[in-house]
Picture 1 (cartoon, rainbow, N blue to C red):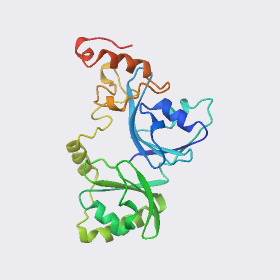
Picture 2 (tube, rainbow, N blue to C red):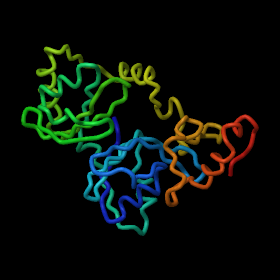
Picture 3 (cartoon, rainbow, N blue to C red):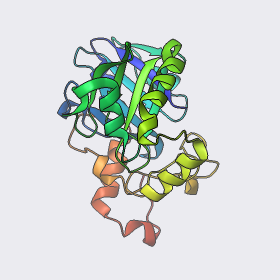
Picture 4 (cartoon, helix red, strand yellow):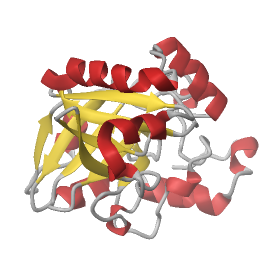
Length: 245
């Protein structure tokens, strides 16, 4: 159900580094970065992943529509943003047998695939991207494919995975798994700053235990000043009624 955006251009990295809290300059080709992004008050708008293709092209995934937010932060810069949500299908293969199933389906392409990395392969002749990512906390992968080949990919994986006991699972099962793993879900575990009705419904990365994603030392990014003040005050500010503005 993710929204997916292809972001290209001379200033693509600059735009993304302005939007998100992570320092994307530290990640090279083949990396996937999990990150939240904030408004000017340091309040979380959404969270998702950014893929680095190494040629100035990136993919951003988000739980909620983000096209206008990216474009608003790209004014005057050389960047092209394309919504590819309907063009790219994603199948999550999660659980202790996922590596064995994928090795049977795609060969040894993923033997050395590290956590939050991606590679290319073919499954039953279908070109795919395989990422070592997931939303369950278990061993798992996500397989990204042109939408027109998504059903054929499903059939191929079910066939290869049958000897391993592969089992289709829906969103309710996924929700239980992500709760057990401590994965956050927008509008459930936190409310987007764009949708909050009152300020007390908003959250900063520090309040969501995502302080490790905040790179205060990089160049200017949305919410940097507010987050720097909050980091300096420490966790006690939340219990003392101190306003950070």
